[in-house]
Image 1: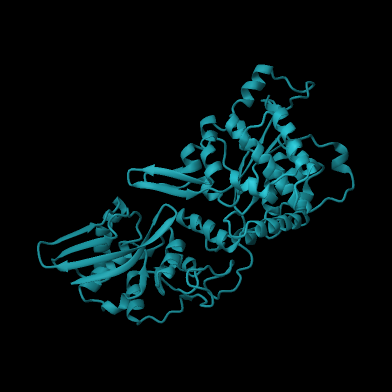
Image 2 (image 1 turned 30 degrees about the vertical axis):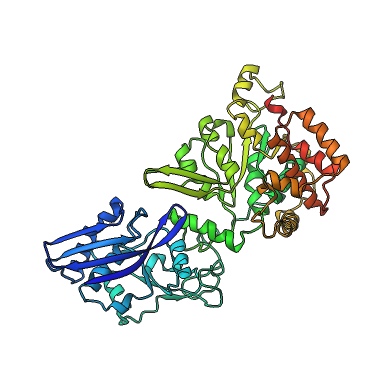
Length: 531
């Protein structure tokens, strides 16, 4: 007898529905799985057989053939255990065919019949909702994740026996999550929802552990007005930022406060980021949907594979986890040069392509790069009273950051040492909330300008977009021509100056880019320290 169960898999960042076809026939006893399965999928045979036996389902001496369709898509992971087990029981007439109609099943089986959590549930459930599936049976630990998608009934099960009871309607436990049907199927419910009642969850687990923790705020930074202005411009246009200064001048402190002035994730961006974290197994129930822009700060010993992603079955790397957020590289020259140079292509294409024998995996990598570094090995150049580095040592140190990477930095600013007067002076310092309001206004201007173009920020513009949205008057064009010749800018560098000037004009609330905006943008191309 033949049965068909709907399941799903992940291929790169994309998800697709898989039909698990199970045929039970007379013949030599066998159990085989076809359809381009990975090693984890092939091992499901042993897990399924033992799990079925331990829940009281004995397999007769028959030939069991399992096909995962479409057969040309590589399948990996352990999420097919549960649908294969249910498909076998249906093919053996232990479950009615109607029980699994319009139902998606995902889950790994333990030998005792326990249903264990799997990765990538959120994007698969969303794809199921778009495909007309209205019920998803998931591991109990993943049920809240499926509940984030509206228009789908997500049912959490703890073991194979409970799965059978759910399918046959003999279990009335209240562990079902039913999302609102007011939104189109496949959209995401509001952030901060809990599986139990759909109400805001309040504090996250980290906040509950540290209830008196104060958020990092720009008001904590003494002085550094020029650096804070550069950070505001970078946040408004999502520009790459490089901070250069002596140790203790506040570079790291400034970088860690940038997420606090960035606009929140939109619904579509939140889904993108949450899907990446779900595929990586990093989406925690206490956080539910990702609503804050990610902030990733890898150590300088990170490998290239960990940075961009990789492995036999490629998984998202750090730059993909920083998608729509901030990637902060502290002590930039301490990273291996070949590791930094890997960032060249992602910074331009906003995505990573990883080629394997099973195909090409594409992961998004649209992040804001923030780097921090010292001007020399000891950190105190050009203060010759404190710097003891030779010219050769300084040049060698700075050359660890290649020219192509520097050319991709939109804003480079020197962070001067903090004066004692700035530390003890009574002052009125702007908080992150005040700066964020200006950033949000500039962001709204960009949203109106780029409506329907697929562009989110000024930094996303390509050469054609720059020509269209960053037009200059005669005086401004003449001014820019002088700057281009004097600073020996590349074409990419010229476009980046124009994009930063466009952001400065947006912060000022003006439609036209003026000479004052270009002058400020040019000041942020401060690469003299590298010459």
